[in-house]
Image 1 (cartoon, helix red, strand yellow):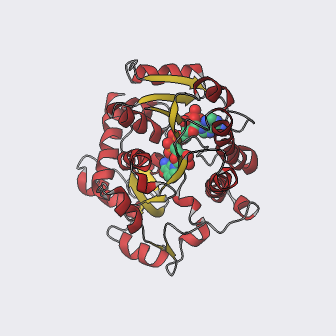
Image 2 (cartoon, rainbow, N blue to C red):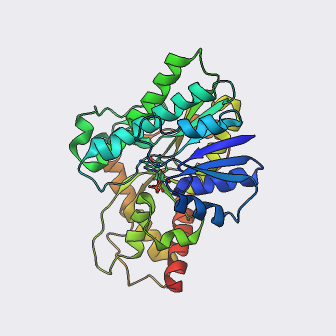
Image 3 (cartoon, rainbow, N blue to C red):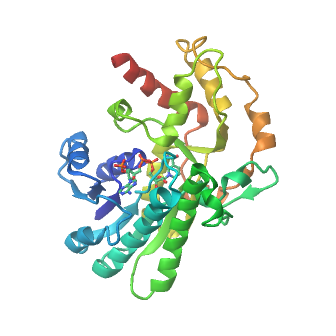
Amino acid sequence: TTVFVSGATGFIALHVVSDLLKAGYIVIGSGRSKRKNDGLLRRFNNHPNLSVEIVKDIAAPNAFDEVFKKHGKEIKVVLHTASPFHFQTTDFEKDLLTPAVNGTKSILKAIKEYAADTVEKVVITSSVAALVNPGDMGNPSLLISEESWNRDTWESCQANAVAAYCGSKKFAEKAAWEFLKENQSSVKFSLSTVNPGYVFGPQMFADSLKNGINTSSGIIAELVHSKAGGQFQNYSGVFIDVRDVSKAHLVAFENPECAGQRLVLSEGLFCSQEAVDALNEEFPQLRGKIATGEPGSGPSFLEKNSCKFDNSKTKKLLGFKFYNLRDCIVDTASQMLEVQNQV
Ligand code: NDP
């Protein structure tokens, strides 16, 4: 079976590609440049079941046409992970909303045009951000589940970069479900979405830490590199380990019961205070050198400052246990410290 993975060079996607290859799938990955694609092949030791295609910018109209013109008749499964995830912009439409929405629309349109009879499963990497906007995230009387939608509009989400990123995930996911509704008779695939909370956990390849860092891992890196007595931003939300996110992408298309479902990936609430507590307790070499905040205050902070989550439906569908916060943070930070010691 051939699986196409968009954005194959990303933090989550590298784990997905690795899991797919291990499970015996043939993988076609897209990256933005020849340099990035060569790097991808090299990292997987030129695995015979891995090939690459360039998709330079998912914001461009018909971005995926060439790939599906060429490979449409081989591809059975499409995992669409590519989407901008950063907050370094003030032009939210151009840099976040439009690429996210256009990317989703153009990959589905290319399937319809060139692979309508071959593609059976599409999995889109959406987000908890599509379920709840940052403003509502802090409301303790709100319960978020697989049915929830971020309430922001195209306009209101542009209040700041974080809200705009969250909006980009909402509008991209909406576009996918709408596309399927409108084109039910001309495609044969079923759609599932994977909606992770903050994704932490080790990089698939430690050297990814040497040239910049993906946005969610940056939250932990900031704590590992904080100063004794220093401040840190107390991010809060739900978290999930990247190794579980990857596994969920495979189950999403392998388990027929996941068709038509939104899979909400959360192992529970988290805040930076709890992560910093884990670092101070688990790493003697960091104790006294990094921030401490108010140790032990995480749970009561979350009680007052976070909405509640119920993803029991997803857990049942996936049927595997997620990494807990301690193990996830320890594995994330251990890799960061190892790489730092090599420099
Ligand atoms: P990364 O930034 O590592 O991955 C994003 C991928 O998308 C990269 O390969 C990136 O390529 C590619 N991409 C971004 N913009 C474009 C564009 N305009 N044209 C072509 N490719 C593009 O982050 P993650 O692995 O964390 O994110 C993967 C997916 O998971 C995204 O859809 C994200 O929204 C979602 N997600 C992530 C969460 C997290 O906490 N990490 C939580 C919930 C959802 P390049 O690096 O070359 O720019």
